[in-house]
Length: 247
Image (cartoon, rainbow, N blue to C red; front, side, top):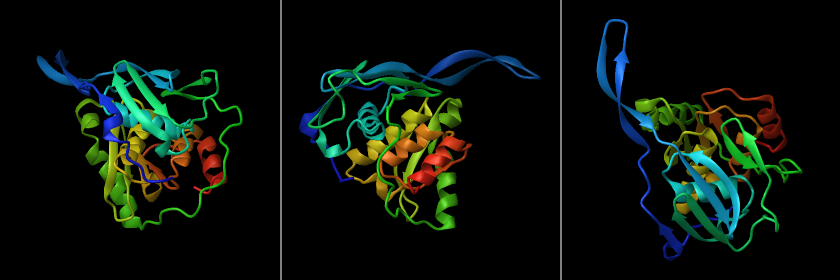
């Protein structure tokens, strides 16, 4: 995957909403009942358009929408090279992307409802060559990454309502990070952030807080990421895909 930065002259981004909102509650504890103010996550519906055609409509955290759009298209295999993306225009709830080349046919892609989001149903399944030899890290960097994902997840710490994904290089430095109410969307946003910063996700390993079924592993595969770490459970389908794709 080539390094890429979308030209700023081809971006139109309206102000994005905050990720949380303060909410007045009655806090009921074993020894007290009293008024309190807590932060709760915001969710919004967005519709992603690619070359004028609807791709998906789903609920996400209404932040990092440009990163989400770029990452979703790459991680779902609708755009194979970020350099094909020429413009991203955000006018909530619409996110409109223009790309020189994409895998969308004349008809809208078939959507697949997942346990934490919506993706694109691929009739042929996940296909493509196995990844080449990927990033190599030592054990210290691995466990540092598992700590970093918790340290980065500030919205999760204040609300308990988000997932977090970070991309970390071989030296243990965080290259991109994103939180979202959905684990799939947190991956999309982290990948999109890296690409928009001119970084190659394949030069990083991914640490996330979500379970790892096939569709989560597939997102990493399509982004060229060969090493995926989670503090949650892998599924047999995710393990099978990782083995097949040399991850």
